[in-house]
Image: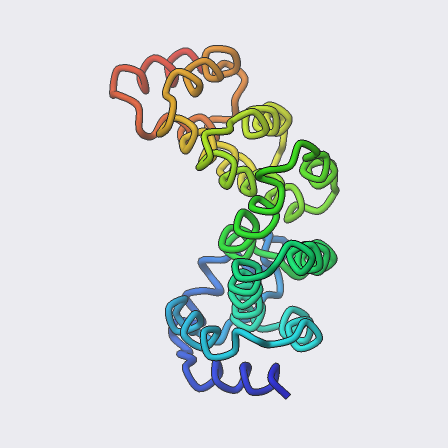
Length: 235
């Protein structure tokens, strides 16, 4: 069975030292966002290399990997899913999106979200007028659904389409979790790379109420004078 083969290939590449570091880095302690997650200690390039050998893995086997308690198994499944989406026709892409969204409880750390959501959900919605899916995800009580909604807009940003990024960033102004502050700030920064006036227009409206982490991420590429202005006036 391919899921077992993939897991064994990942286990063979594991490093206890890296696994310990990853457990700390991805906040797996009690009460933290990654509580209970377990690591093999593979690097991302190693995991991608394994995924490249199993690009045709069927969804029933990917589902087993997503259910696995080991982080790299879930990561590998998502890398495979992204690869399949890129080469799929429209009908198959719809199936992949449905499969992806039915397993968001297992896409349960920020790296898993960030390497997959805009390649799948974002690309699927990029040319569509109806993007209500993003707002349903934003309204979810699951943190990972909310982050998927925000980071998926990277696909739109790269198409010089900023509307949903700005709307979602406004929605998440009052979010309490640091991971959402970082996600929204990151997407705003990406907007600013392409159109600084759009970014500063958003900042001029909301910088006084933005969470400081969101603001710091958003202004990272602005001039020192601009940064000082927005950070000072946000106090």
